[in-house]
Amino acid sequence: MLARDLAVEYETVGLDTGATEAARLMAEHRLPALLVVDEAGAPRAILPASQMIKLLVPSYVIDDPALAAVIDERHADRLCQALEGRTVRDCLTPSVPAPPAAAPDATALEVAALMAQARSPLVAVLADAGAEKRLLGVVTASHLLERLLTAAP
Image (cartoon, rainbow, N blue to C red; front, side, top):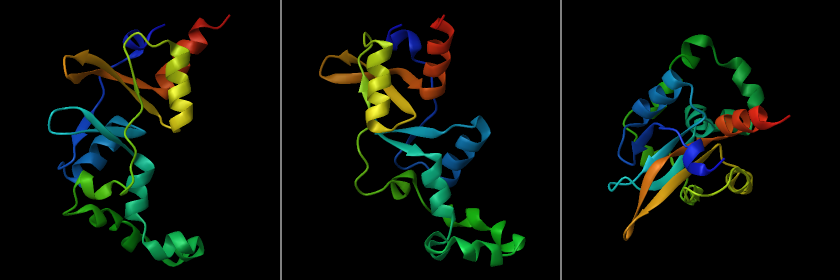
């Protein structure tokens, strides 16, 4: 199995996409993360769903999770208001690394190694298009596991 065969179309968002829109996309498609692309469509970052959740939770609750028990449901229902007016760019950590990327002819093991090294649920598959790289698709951890398990005796 090569990366080009494992790659699937995957939802992407731009740096200036609204954070609420990105969160809805994750929720509607049950995605573990979104691939963030720049204006040219090149992979720029991975925005994990866990990072979006972290933005919803007040910092004092992250510091002391016991405080979560004293917040009533009426206030908890308003957590998503924390995303209003923010963009995907605002949701990324300042030192966000570039997403792991594989060449189309990378083997499944090479893709798995990239995923493991980066601790990423996604690997972008990029083809050379002259001076630029073109996104062919994404290999997700769940899809890779499925294909590897199917190939197992």
